[in-house]
Image 1 (cartoon, rainbow, N blue to C red):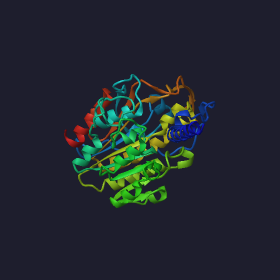
Image 2: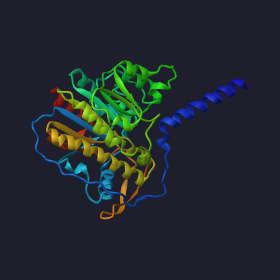
Image 3: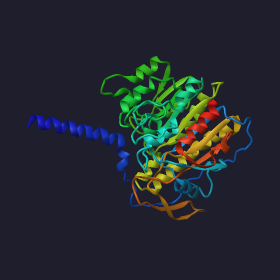
Image 4: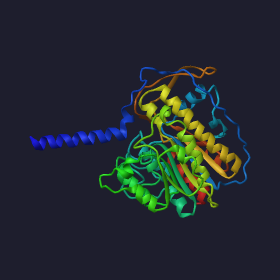
Length: 384
């Protein structure tokens, strides 16, 4: 009897831990309300299309997790017809299938984008034989470039993890966190604090980060004041909250990371993820998706503003997959009203858009494999 109770307790603890990491998969907020009724607008700027060079010195790679064409157009409609994203005049499409599934997950999708290799669902930058594959972030480090990651999820979640870690399963959050210490990444901002300092092995990785020269912060008001050096910012125990809770975290984190990384004369590679567009799709919530899409567009605006002024920065915006099969069933452009329906709460297999701005942007026109995006970025940024 005691043994059975012990096993039950372990299962409950395991279940609670899993729920804490992946609660968004079961999100049902505003599930009944399918209509976004409009909100406060922000100023959308138009940027120059003239650049200093044919190839980029820097790449800002922006992933709207779960963002298909419909999610993009829901943002355009909600913002009365225009987004920062429209500055990207070179547009293509990416096929998202993984090596073992017609419908990818974020781990295999992120790995394809970060390494140029298709792998099995759940894999974090390892191939079908679970062999490590070098990521574009790691290659950039080896070539003396500054590197960074920004995410509205835990920084150990599948998409950001696939750029810096190598693990056979995406659920190995603490092992992924330990992989950060094996790199020389300059800036990372996101959630996931518990995976660094509340670990089963009792090792405090936050202290090790400090020993390695990182400035460590947990609050965005402090993060936005950082101008240089190495920054590790873990601003939530696991994932950051929805927009109403986290505020302007993503655009501020994006601008902060760019400011720090641009101090490197050799250039930089930065990946920015708008994680929760995907979660709105899982929840079948039009409101959630639109809120996250507009927040992601504000971050895109920060990237484009820098790129236009710098003249040597390529900004690429894409997705790892689409989520929810979102279909816009009605709307009012002038009022920012969006009504949508969803056939699934999972991912879908459709192609996702690829937008590009800056030197080398013309390489991202047409239909391509998700792995092609990595290959094109690496050739443009590193010449190989």
